[in-house]
Length: 399
Ligand SMILES: Cc1ncc(COP(=O)(O)O)c(C=O)c1O
Image 1 (cartoon, rainbow, N blue to C red):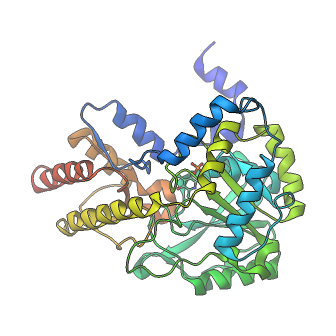
Image 2: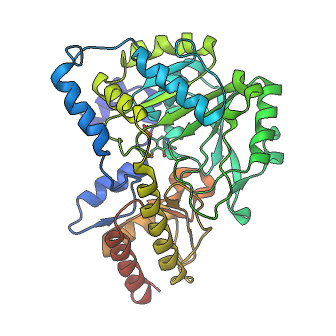
């Protein structure tokens, strides 16, 4: 039996047309290159804070139920804590039973949400550029991304005037990631309010995927969370991830806040998909929320210094890259100014020639072409080594 035969006969069409995210592809390719340095994956260098690890160690000794499933929407006590956190963060009161769902991270949350709301051929509006995996998740449901371009000349802000024309009878939702991956920009309150109003008028969901709102740097514009506007609550699904701000990416933990009617439906998909988020991770999440997040100031200080470093290094290469200074998260999305065919080939050539791994911008949507994403959540030494190599490369062979 040939490999081709097997593919044609056993793999679903929706899967055949999927691509593994370029972020992971570059991570896998660079793992094969000796001495590679990577700015490709947004995986922070931090460890899970001690107060969370210590609490889990203690629970391991005393909690006889720790190895058991929880209910599909998560442990009741954890959902109560989440409802309190959401009230503190947004001023909006939600019910732990009716509106809160614990997930195995925002990727899993987005997946079950998309599977709950989308039929084949439905459309979802994504910003362009957007988070690359959202495109693949839509394809997995047989749904289509409709791109809402961000304005590179206006520091990658969305333009609300361009939104209405993208809504059709098939539109089900608009996805927002602010602070943005891959641009590191905070979307303005003005644009988000217009988006909320339009969504309410047209009966659309606004899905807010939020791994990064804890990472806002000094002198940045204020972060605005649309989930804090009570009038829009009926249209909003808010997803919070513990991965980045608690350095818990490997624990796989997040939560979703959504209207009660939707939670009833999503629960069925959660049960069919994973049953529940891992209980030990929920215990870790309870420890996280029971404690003041005092580790965050340290994370932000380090990331802010890394942002200054990467901007300084980019400023020394004005003939290679132009960029908007990131305001939040830990990504920068420079335009490639040197001659090249496309961002994919550019990134592969850089990896093969000098062992530097960047993510090609085309993975984040059509407007991402001719850009690369750099993640500066890695140690200073990695940033400096990557830029030393890039600098040397572009001062010699390339031009
Ligand atoms: C926008 C966005 N959503 C989701 C994720 C993944 O989150 P989680 O680890 O909670 O699944 C990431 C990680 O890079 C991200 O940038």
